[in-house]
Length: 262
Image 1 (tube, rainbow, N blue to C red):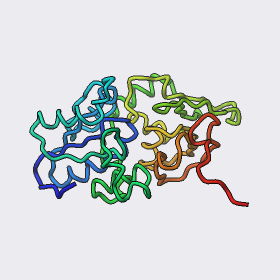
Image 2 (image 1 turned 60 degrees about the vertical axis):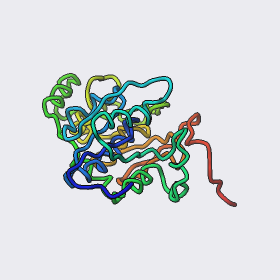
Image 3 (image 1 turned 90 degrees about the vertical axis):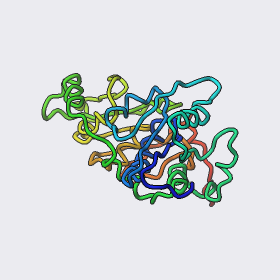
């Protein structure tokens, strides 16, 4: 990426997934704070999660197509339509773009580190996500009403579904009086709407996903349990304290890359 000039529009090419978008939000904020207008095409399925909570970005919802053009070609086209001639592409690997994986740092960094190196933004800023969104107290209150949470009631928030994997964690060790709240049972809310409820929970158990990314980047003060899903290079760097659970046997994380020596 070339040096960017203050005051001009800057496009972000990272249309999916939602976890990658959360990881990259502080990158966009870094340049927005320098006076840049940020234009970001994302898959339309994620638009509702950020449209109202991150209003300082001009979000461009794009449909997912079977040809895969929603990854790069369609975002590039949409940026051009809006007169945005400068962009940062944050994919670390993409079919048809060998230049991404041929970067000098590709083999030595996890995918989230790669994005920050590509964008020339200090990696520690990944954990400034709290500065990147606006809480929606009305939505959170609506969610709490729907959950019918009673004051003082112990509960655990669970997220089981990653983009390409669903976990079935063993919850039998939880105290029987705890209520288990599965976020996927309450659609229509942004993950950001859940933040106060997760922070007030007795525990948070999540598959490696957008939700765990968000909770880690916000360093929420809750007892956190991480369910591995991917191998080391596709698992983000964790900045807060987690209890790492055993990876599900049918997950990529269960396939050892490095073998212990005797």
